[in-house]
Length: 140
Image (cartoon, rainbow, N blue to C red):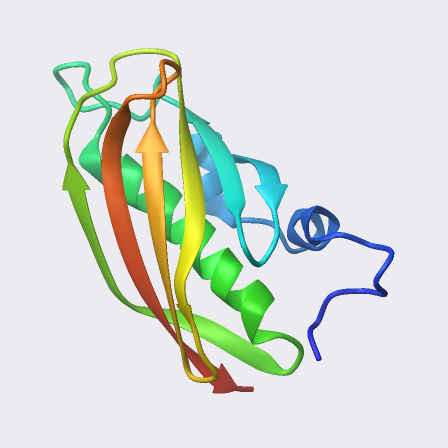
């Protein structure tokens, strides 16, 4: 069983009710798509940059952790909680303006562990960062 409402309500509605948290809100992260198999969110570059004007690497990680943790909690279901235990990121390109998009897909969905990969790309579809997060799933 999951903590989703009846089958006629989708994951986007569950995610909207739950919210991403204060940090993600401050960074301008917005959901575009939300299912167990694929979660997508966007984030503006503006306001999330280093002093030299590049997207801050930590901002990519916040986007990735927000997506991966929410996806793991959707998978975990009712009466269970997914909490991050490991995250890593490889930044391969920089963004200086516009919107970045994170696409989160499961690598492993188990009873006690969920692993997700998040590919962050720019508006031209170029990959900027690859994030992998592992969440431990436990009973409440």
